[in-house]
Image (cartoon, rainbow, N blue to C red; front, side):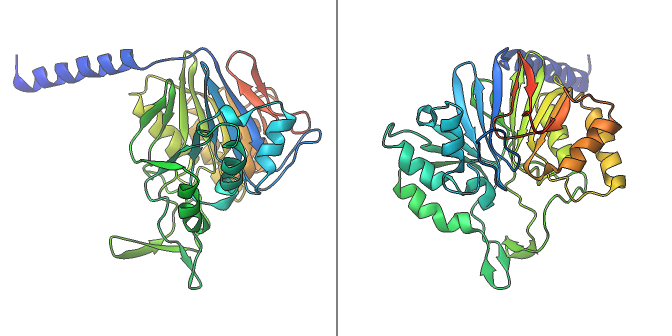
Length: 318
């Protein structure tokens, strides 16, 4: 038996052990609390937030734009956010972080640990410059948030935040999807470069049907993010459902054809595109990948994906 063969055999055994040790849930739900489209008396805005629930664990994904949107929508839906102690911030933009300070101030009165632990990608507080102004307005809030008792937890690599709920970590940019605006600059290690939102990360929930991918804007690229997510788990999972913002609203027809073709490779059975995904982009994916309205739709406030019940994107958005 050669040395290289022994090494390969050891790697295979180790990967098998890792795969066995990864927990899977049969109970998970993602409820949208902030996006543009809203049913009933819920509040719509240019922003994103969602509550993730799995086996009794809860984490708030992003916090919307305006101070009170997420709190008011949660109240209307009968959701008590004071019980949620962890918040996941996909990236620095205020339409995803703007509600955090108000949420923490109000909820900590009921539970001192409400939204106390904030999970962010490495690079979250880097300066972003445009016209001589630092556009990273979330950085300006950092001290005030820490004064409220918030503890920032930084992520670079994939990690299980709580059972079955993983951060993808910072996503490699293998494909040039360029899902960012391009009018800001940043400096990393003395080198000035275009702000490509390097801290962008998403959540992957490991279930017995595949991964549920939750994205804020997908500035790293929807295909890059899906590829990275499945490779994190040694391609043991397909993407069963994708929920959130994927920044496709400015894509050309040619780019949408490529995107739809690529995401189909990852077995996406359900797709709820909210926020910056764009209504037309959602319809394009539905048409190109021959999905039904029950499988691919625009997400609205109050809409959800439930692992057992399937998806309910919202009455107005189907």
